[in-house]
Image (cartoon, rainbow, N blue to C red; front, side):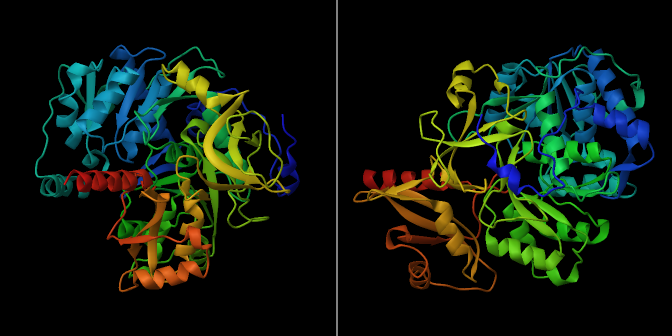
Length: 563
């Protein structure tokens, strides 16, 4: 155990440790139902569900799953955007004793088949437009039942009548599914199933609540086994960190997708625990997000830097009132200082960078929101969390200021990878979970990420951290988004390339950017190449896919060499 020097930097309102109640995740919803049954829990495009409606709907879904043969420990997949059905199903699966498997609706048939085969799900809940894709992979999986729903199912009148026409125009087809055999309609389940409570044996330490698949940037995605303890712990840590938030009063904007662990913890679970209201959007659309904030007045907005950047650069930003937002926890990618300052000036709220991984449920560090913030740092380890910087490949804890691999211990750290004991063993060193991120800790216990181990650029023997170069580029007035990567170079081994999206109406040349970087960076860190794009490849959460750009460069080089 390391000395937790960071505790001295905690604001006095944040506890050093939290007593974790040994309850299942779904107990949060049961408590909300018992304590404030008539309070609105979910808002979706004008439709609202109270805690009572949500609780009873989740129990109906749970009982229907049991009637389909789902037993404790069985995996049930959800392939939906953020909508009321995704909330109902999540808690319903847990009430039934099942394990939730969140699936990205953007998955191709190959990706979906791999994940369903790997997790062994017996039932999958899908959006109607994804039904044909799902049916094509069934024979290669253990799926026995498919439950189908549509966005229109939870839209208010008359939106529910209009939406099918919009959908057909948008996707070019409409899907008709009968409620028979292995196919089941969500709307019919809500009409026919009973909302009776289900008794399930429960082990706080070991029972899985969620199989969350990693992004798969290296090799195949792995199923991260997250227990009820992991999720309860991280949700309560998050609640403690937001000490100025009031139980029952917060409105949380749910743009982060629930199929990403970040959205799952900070919206899907935290809102129910706090007995607040989640305002859901099925995807991130800048104009829709601005209208929703202006009208629904969310107080908390967990998001990713690309989301905040998108809002700040919308041409009609001044038409919308964003002053309801009092706190934002930014994750999935580094938060540029310029973005932080502009967003705070706009909203009057606070936005801080957090840090975590799928394997840690996800948050391990964050800057204090209202006091003691240090820009450029990922902040302090959360309560009940131990963190250290280890010498690469060893278990030696390095002193403050020395760069090594950031490692974590805590109740939010995963149980392991699903059916991958060797990968699990490789990810732990002497009880420490190895993050794969290089960084250091200062004398006050604040941690800093310099970059992913695999993203570090080695050019001519120099170590270059893309994040440092990106921070400089973001200071340039013309740049809206950027990412820096190391591309193959016959002389230097690797060289630095910047991929850039310019702000609307702005222009800048390679030469001007080169001069700007040279005035702010050592010569060996300055990008040798600049590529201007209209957009950058991103995950569903808005994380820029650096590796995809590197792979594109390698493919281009191979094609040139083949000529």
